[in-house]
Picture 1 (cartoon, rainbow, N blue to C red):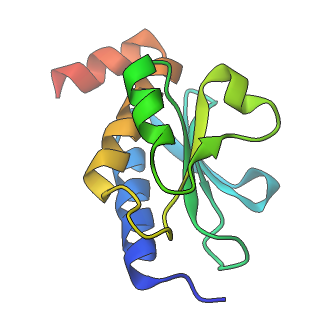
Picture 2 (cartoon, helix red, strand yellow):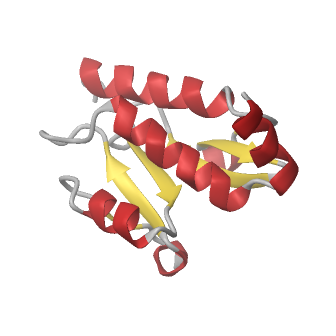
Length: 126
């Protein structure tokens, strides 16, 4: 199953943005792409091989951002109990899914929730 071109472009923009944040690293636990800040995951980027619909999962503790993310087509609290901690899974292939810029805003918010203060200070300096 091929990933639609616009979903793949969004995924690539979000991945690039996430890895551009201070101290961000990319890892592949469970065969899934994740971005971490200081060994803590701040965005799950899923798999890009087409075996699952593309999506990003971010931690949004701000009530307004969290509620907004959940209005995205197909969005849902993340599985494995992560949803209770504010994690939201946002599909990229749904019609009307958020633009890459908004997804990047949510990735930055997730980063700010998870990253240590020194990295957030570095981000604010930039």
